Image (cartoon, rainbow, N blue to C red; front, side, top):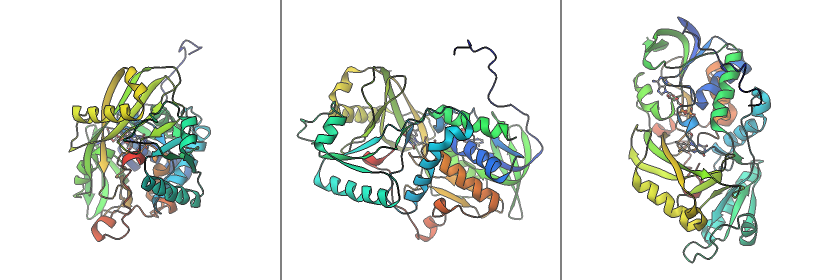
Length: 404
Ligand code: FAD
C-alpha cells in the first residue's frame, strides 16, 4: 500500500500448458495448490501443472469462514489435524507470505451436563494427541465472552472447551501463498483450464483432456472438492460423496468485539470477527445435493435465529453478504486421500465442511502419496475402501458446534 501499488507484478506466471508433465494436479483450490507446493518442495517434482477450471481462489478456498483448529476426537482424524495445525504455525515463514494466521482461540460452548461430559472426553483425547485443550466453567466463559446471552432458560451456558492455538487465517492469502511458492519452484499454474476427460490405457493413467487441449502425464491427482464425483466419474469411479451447499454470512465492519472463534452447542451457529471488522458466521448445510454455489432462505433464517439466541447483540449488525460453496460430503464425515484402481491416478477429497484447516496437512500428505506411492503416516487412515468394506470408518462428522 505504501508504494502506491507501484512495481507490483502478478504473484505467479500464466504459462501455456506443456504437452507433457511428470504430474498433473486437477483443481487449483487450497488442497491442489498445497499438494503442488509440497511435491516440489519436499519431493523435487518440478515438472508439474495445476489445472484450474476457473481462477485461483474462486472455489471453497476463498469461500470458507477460515477456521483453523486441531480438536478432533477420533484416531485417524486427531493425528492428521494435529499435523496440519503444526504446518499452519510455520506456514507463513515457510512460503514467505502473510496469510494473517491468527491463533485467537476457539471456544466450543456446552449447554447441558451431557454436552460438558462430551467436551471433557474430547479435551482429554486432544491432550493425549499432544494438542492443547482447556475446559472452561460458566464464569470463565462469561469473562471471555461477556456478550453472550447468559439469561437464556432454553440454552443455559454451562461452560466450554477452548483451544488457544486454534484461530483463523486469511483464506485467499493461503491460496496465493501456496500458488506463489509452487510457481517459484517451477510448477505451472494454469487457470481457465477445465479437465474434461482422463486418459487411461490398460489400467494406467496417460494424461487428461482439457479445454486447452490434451496434456500427457505420468501421474494425475484429483483434488476438486465439491466436483469430486464428476471428475472421478471421468475415470469410471463412483465415489461415496454427495455435494451439498454450505452458506456463510458477513456483517458490516464493526469495532473489535469478538476476540475468539465461538461455536454454539445447541444450534448450528459459529462466529468470528474478521480483521476488517465484519462478523463472519455460518451454520449447517442446506441439506439438498446441488452444484450451485449459493444457498437458500430457510437455512439463512435458521442461522440468524441461532445467532440471536446465543448473542442477541448481533441483531443490531447489518448483514452485508451471504454466499455458498459446494461441500464434498462423505458418509462418515472424514476425508479420503488414496490411490485409485487406475495406476498413477490418485484422489484427495471428502473434506466436508472442514477442509480449510486441512489445507497444509492434506497437501503435505497427498504430495507424499503421489510422489512415493506410500501413504503418509498422519493421513494413512483416509482410505477409500473403508466405505466398501466398512472397516476403518471414522464417524466424526463435524456436526453442530464442532463443525468448521
Ligand atoms: P476448492 O477451492 O473448491 O478447490 C477445488 C478446485 O477444483 C476449484 O477451484 C474448482 O474450480 C476446481 N475444479 C473443479 N472441477 C474441475 C475440473 N474439471 N477441472 C479443473 N478444475 C476443476 N473449512 C474449515 O476448515 N474451516 C472453516 O471455517 C470452513 N468454513 C467453510 C464455510 C463455507 C461457507 C464453505 C463453503 C466451506 C467451508 N470450509 C471450512 C470447508 C473448506 O472451504 C473446504 O473443505 C476446502 O476449501 C476444500 O478444498 P479446496 O480448497 O481444495 O477446494
